[in-house]
Image (tube, rainbow, N blue to C red):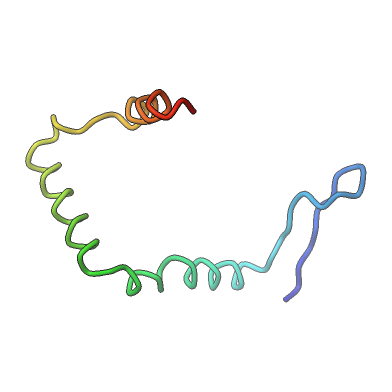
Length: 76
């Protein structure tokens, strides 16, 4: 694979450039092909929750609020 590195002034590698076809293959391998590895019960649970959200959108809680609750609970 033809990689190109970007370095800072001290010579430390800070970024890498890879060919787009390799990037797309990595994305597919990491995400798209992994859907088959998700247990069926988890897929069903997500579908159930999405349906609930569509039917009762007012029950949704803002992500930032939930994150704050978790941080307070676990003193993060």
